[in-house]
Image (cartoon, rainbow, N blue to C red; front, top):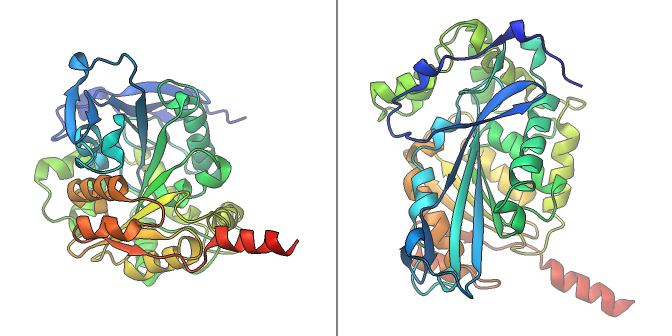
Length: 381
């Protein structure tokens, strides 16, 4: 069991994390092995039906079954849940298009966005060696068990959508194999499923930069690839880490990426790959949004991710954002809108119809019809 001396834990003062631009959400706090962690837990003020927003206080629910959608937003390094400030309002407020299959339901949404241990408003052990693959992986597993499976309304069923980028995907893409009946959709942005293979040149350069910069200023790292950010937004990324000791989690993430056989996380990556490659078409619906301007986890890495995990039997939707850098969520509003609309229009076997209605989104047909192959095998028995 993880045991950490409380005197070796840094907690960012609340005063440093107030009045953040575009981020009005009040955090909830829970505990993981004695460490306090923060999460955003927001519920839509509307029920969506037939392309309309029905304010919850006006919704007459007698005889109407509400279909819940839970969005799990997993951040990467060196960010925190603030990264999702442009996507959360869309998840909470955008109605599925009128006339789509989703519009026929009564839909309500919940958004959960945790800060990992060492990031955001969560506690930050100051000793670098505390941060391991297992710590972060187990944190997300326990988060799902407690906040999704253990709490209404998410525990009552409905759709669960994994939203992930960078380490959010390195960790998050392993979760569907652990919870094989939970996830219905994935919104995947510049990330990788690591199986012990050499990383990109851009990633190696970033790793070496962090290694040379133990007291790195986090805000400028995000601002360098997201030049449209205001000074206040850049400062909001800096705010959780005002001291060198508070940056242990930032320093440790790059060396933990499973880039060699035998590293922690490689087995989880292979298990996830096997899981994705044995799923029938559209049993999970991946929507892949690629920040083309990213030198670290850009188009080549994302195309490998698609070909290794989604191209065989699942298929996926793909959207390229030419101007977007590594922190794709900074262009996230339109991405969230297009993902919601695409999923709403998509039906089994008719995914191409969705792309005719949603501009800039491509459907990648799976190479194999797994259901047909199973039936063919049965006929030979």
